[in-house]
View 1: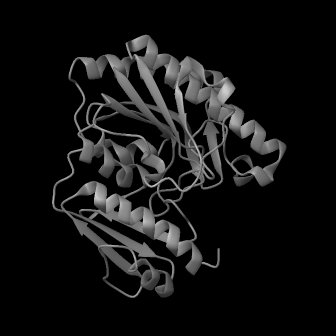
View 2: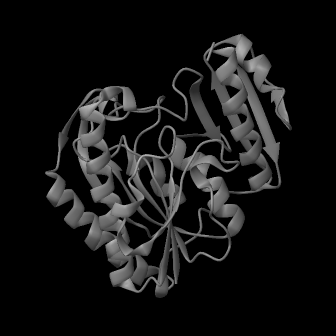
Length: 278
């Protein structure tokens, strides 16, 4: 059984500040990477204990090359580096039995969530799939639905599961911290968080084997509505295939093909960075 894991950083226990998430943070970033690695390895170990025969990791944070490959458990394949066409979902396809989302966080437009954002906080103010407000997990679920792969395990802060649950029916979830504000949280001890993730990942694989987890269930044709920070960004976004202006700061991507929709969204994330002066 093949398991695919997308991992992020802001939902990891102990992470509450941008310095812990960016190379410019120096020693604090190094500690953040160690905390993330521990949770990723816990997910790998749990998946293998549950019966997985192969694990593929997709680094989905920042420059997407945050781990020391030598320290990754279970001989897992490590997909790393920038400018991946499927971004946070690179490497997932129909050959996988399940997808795991590890270290995820809440959306920028939702309830207070530690270090909340939706892909790029300087660009996106809100995102909606088929009219429902979503965060990164909901956007990424488009790819899982395209390939018919269930999201079987989710870890992150207390807001993450509430935003992901409707796309991960039957999944196991672990709450690593209770968010207080965007820059504070009551965190589990890292050892406890890793224990719960290890146990949860094992349970998730067993549940998949029993047929107890459903695919995201996103209806088609689908719409992805994006609210951007400025009108200029919205105009630039329309340069991406299938993207239409719907308001002063809003655009819509509509498609029957969910992977095509997601790929257009990835293009929007890249080109709007230029409109923001980056």
